[in-house]
Image (cartoon, rainbow, N blue to C red; front, side, top):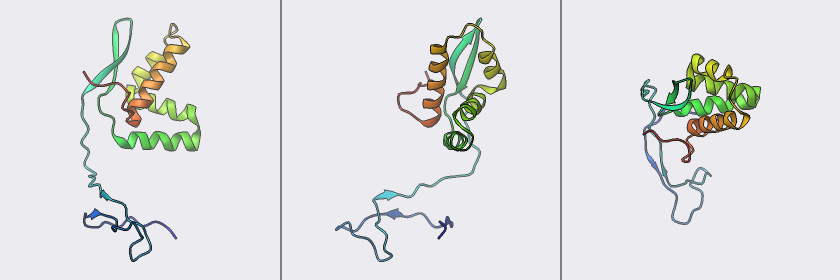
Length: 132
């Protein structure tokens, strides 16, 4: 049986006091149904990530949640390298990614640090960078 995502009116979902399943055989949890929008509202604010020869390269201060979902799909379907490259290009832009890729002085540790920061930032890890 396939899942159905039909549009419905928003409502709060609560469990029965005894925690048992409701009449349809499903256990209800206590949470509010998320109200999402398909509107394209993306902040243009950016934060610095690294610089090369005095040129600063930035990434979005706020990364839309769908970017984390997209990179997760790519990791699963095409592998970690393909997903990570896509994420870096998505956040840095083609110029920023190429500048980093062509920087002959970056160490392996620095490369891992940049990738780790970008992944944490894209997936919403609270330990990731904060906008100033």
